[in-house]
Length: 424
Image (cartoon, rainbow, N blue to C red; front, side, top):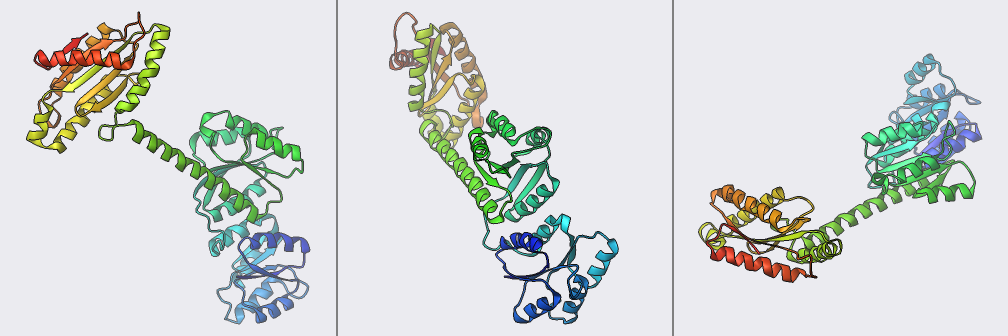
């Protein structure tokens, strides 16, 4: 795409050039209306920016002549001026200008570019919200226009307190902060405060600084910033750094979720969501060692659904699975988070009761037995038999020994007629 800038000031030529280059424009600079007309005869432009006052014509007169030709009726033409006269705006629009932009409000030009022109090569897969702590409204507006092009909406805070209030009520993909702030505040202080709070440990932070001090940039990184960028900010660099930060953070989130999924596959029973036999064995090792060392009570329940084979034979395995899942839910509801509940296989479940002696464990088992008898999952009358035992604090015992004792008690409950609790 081609852009034509008709601007006699080298300073504003550079400013406008920075804005347009990030849209992948090939830019032609001229300083008079005559040169602008000549350039338009030689090339096809997709965007024109013209100063209000030139040596040969005004921007309004230039716009009138371009529109009079008819072929450039849809060409975006923006007039840039330092004046704020409302009548001037009306005249410019009547002449066919797309908009008139004041030189002290150039971020509006970027907003217009964002609406009119696609991002070109900067097609990053980014969405969400960013927070920018910056004490300059002008800089914040310009940055907001840039972030919109990336697909990010932006909240702006003038102070650390205002930024913290926004963080209480919003989730951000990215946090940006200037290093030097008003009222003796610094972005370094803000970064340290964020990293001291657990919920912001992984949020990407980009420090923005106009200081050339290498030590200050190193301090920002040591305080917890993921990256930094120096003012004046080049659009291409800003886009690349933001994309890298957000993409890397999303990759970490994805890996964390995948790790959690693999952990659940390794430790959970896929049908009921309870822990599996392997994980129960690992937890039991730690709990037994802790209980023996600190002389804490620890008990074990082994639970078996009575006549479960008949449920599968009479109603089908899909109903049997529903009965197992409903029983698992009842176990989760009955016991605390400190207790470890596992499906050991088939219709057998094991519960490791944290800091619970034999009498309390027996009472809890009896309550569970009575509750499950009334449960009737899928309308099927169901009962369980439970064997109970406790760790002997007077001697060193291992899980297999204690489990065997509880399993023997379970067998005794079955022999005694089922639907009952036997402690050993």
